[in-house]
Length: 354
Length: 72
Image (cartoon, rainbow over all chains, first blue to last red; front, top):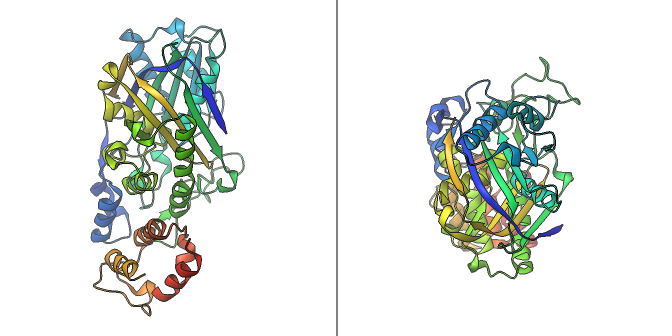
């Protein structure tokens, strides 16, 4: 479905990455594949370095660190936070909401709306859309969108399908009103028939984790995982993305009256380089305009890859310049979405390490 | 289709492929190869095929027949 917003902007993006760096080669011996085959996979998918949080580090730890950094460096004032949106698939607990935990930790005012949203690869798009909607309220002047995931501990180390690409990260985006910014176009679609394409079967209320769900089982491709682990049907995700995303981009460009060459950057979720290059070809844009280098440098951190992409590839250029950008996220749900907007003249756009 | 056979040979890392070749007997036959074939079929024929479907074919010829009767 289509959304449109007026007089709003992103005024700052901070990405928080765990310091621990793991190399693809470090884990090759865990996979039941020949060295040569694994190296071929590395080359095709662009696997190399991943950022993996230390054991026991929660999404909220990365978020707290980033929020305190912004507050201590006078880039954000506590009193001006009217809404705190926390998008994640790895909340600290089932209850309370992690946004409330952050609210308490920072000792924010009572007139701050806290919302947790369970979303993954399209989570940044959903989070922005929610932020834009909230800003239409008079009482909301500034929204803090936190997207954080530490899913690496849920991925089997013997799963060559998913482990080489996983990454942990958090990001904080500040969204506020500004009459000088042009209209923002947003499109979001859902297909719950594909809810099982990307999932963690056990650990919720339907199938609580126990000894049985922890049993490691080999799949048809020689990967080992348990029901407690994340499981992805890679070919279905690939086909879904190639089928659904290009027409969505085409339509949103038409709706916003933008030629595809007028977009300076296509800042997409980062599943792997292979998929992104095929996507660029199918949309018909230069691969250089659609960065695909996040997985090889940091890993795929679900909803955090779009802000990581922005922080890493645009850096402080975004403080001076304004770009026409097309953002897109796609994955778990299945959920896919896109935003066409102007992005720039931000107060900050950088990466810090936890 | 001849061009696609050349591409298939490249993906499978062999000099050439014949219609009667058994898919699973290629040394390079694995999930990454499958994905590469899915991507090649998508870009050359604008056709979506699942890993399951490809796995249900025995020979290269079976795969080509499927593409022929389903391509746009």
